Length: 575
Image (cartoon, rainbow, N blue to C red; front, side, top):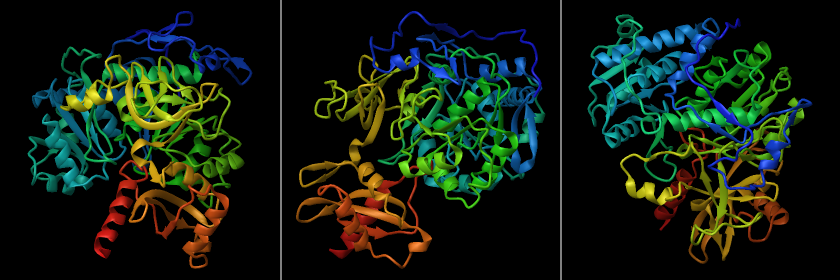
């Protein structure tokens, strides 16, 4: 990958090594780690605060095209196609012109309904250049989900999808109306062909004034694990700040990596984690190796082949890789950074990963409402396996009591995690009351997650407030039980929930996926007995049920609500 000299700078990132952050209260315990950061024997110069440029996110792509026009931006493996940064912005500019001619501009949002493809990236920057917002829709979602998002938003009149997903869109159109459906791939009567539309227009995006701090860049609909998805309003400034704060927290002011990285882009761009990581990859001018889906064997092969230095995934991806028969076959020694986010990574999986790769998985934390990254474990930070690390630059965090939600708790005590920083959302779309419940007047975000902070400033997620199991007066966290239960040699995966009990109100039940070699050879009661011997008396599961697979949401998180509904349905039928 060849680099070109930089002649034009569209934006400047002003870093401050002296003055404290206006977002972070003084003397936070994790700040010492940033002052003492050493990586590969060298001091990492990490700023205390950053003056974030007020730019739209497509400036990241535009700057990459100016600095490294001939570097490969996207290598799409299913079609063996490569697009340079110059080509990426060329296609985005043409699409932007076409969308503007359809009358699309500010105060609108365009839905993108597809898996990871080059056209997703073209669409992303093409849409934002019109001043409209992007609403990614997970390709695993069905027609009723699409209809809910279109109906709830009230501003989506155009949807871009791949031809294989059009039948689902067609079903959704029985419930809602769309003015334009743009299709990538096979031509479909009654729709607009993506490539034909783009080819008609010059690479001249419309002239639009964007206010990065006020204008919504992404209207992200949350996963809906506890109810219907809500629209999260993330501004351009939110995303830009999250990208830059994360980047400087990882590597400080080291500019030597620009234009040299190769990243395995497996995170789905329809999810806020993947959406923002793509902006990070573009900001770093990296080559993104992109796939239609996650194939562990292919991903590990490409890490070895392209000597990728970073793999960023979700726990399910790590689970599939460490249990793959070829896990020990591939040489993954080029990796210097392994990050897991979006859900808790079981300790057993991180231990198996390190045993083979000799590399710790740095768990992080984030949520849609914070763009998403708030905590990370940079490569220079001493790793603690079950910790989510420390807050990134310009991000403050605190643990508050569950009763009032206002009293800050000391290190070691469990309460609700609250976040403050420039990446925190503008609010929930058309839900001012819910926004008021979630965002305080002094800009703190209620996460709804239970956590604790130790005396060194490391944070630990304990579980969701809504998932606490109340067993005979004890508060039991499902994650704690799952962590202990996973140590049983027969258990491949497990999920723990609270289920109704007529005598005591609620009891503890574990849903277990057995390893193949144990199927038919061990009874559920044996698992209960083992747990009783190895776990606290109030914590072990009283019931165990074997299932074939763990239900997951469209973004790969454990779908506990689905299991609760299944359980309630059984109880209803039996009564």
